[in-house]
Image (tube, rainbow, N blue to C red; front, side, top):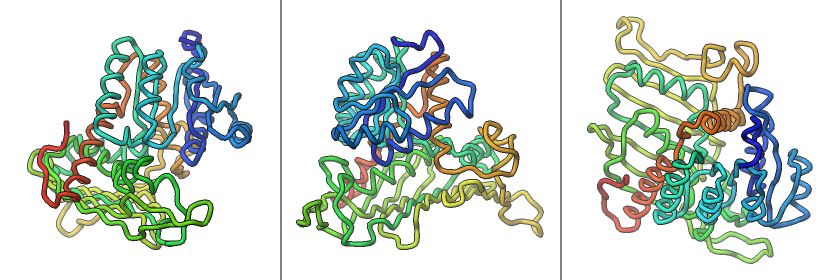
Length: 382
């Protein structure tokens, strides 16, 4: 494969919208922050030749292409980064893995269980040949959440009993906002459930090590039509809000609450993790902070303690600024790419894996089915 033997990696990225810009930022900063093989932002792909050419120049890609198959066929490309809508994830990822390319794909892994199963099978076969794959649940790489996982693993909150997870945005509160592919089931698979809920489910599983054994779900669409590019009304075919209760392994329970209709909530991913010895709170709108409550503190001194996660002793932060200086959302992409490149270089399985993505897909699918059929479902993870 390409140039990886010379300690370089050439990346081809499919898609150039919002996530493409975020991924470009991550790749662009990787060598500046971490000691990794040299990254070359080789090719970026989009269907509009003029638009993708402009974006390539702006974001630092060497070439602009209009067919993702050209990236797969290019022997110099080592890594394929997939930032397209979910309906194309499986086709592109499987083709790239079979061609010997390492693959990073945006979440959710796929739109259907059949697609995610096929992607897992392709990833396992590729890994046996030394070809790695990962799904970009980048919030795992927020330093405060890395610290949260360490504290939970060390037993600081005891046995986890109850998790409350929410992801609240307000960008669809305006009913006149135009249609986009995110509001079309055939492109996105689900609405807010897969877009935001997938992150919450992944973090619940990742931080606590618990699996989901049963779900009860409710979905709602508040605005059923929106203007398309021509001014005509198009039908919204996905959910605007999703609520679910989850039965977790070991007898724990969780609440899931996600919406894009919460005026004033810009990008609030919040987690409350309650255990027998204490609890942890996190809010993405204050992503450099973690709150810890320890029941073993003296009774007269108990209370939540704010941990400012900005020190070089915290995960990843020695690569950035002097102690005490905050980082932002975009850094989580650089951290995820750092871990992915390390897995390729060291020949170790990448994380989050396609299996992780498939497990989240199973939970999302079960919530949607529960909402549609009006009853609880058991053992959704596969």
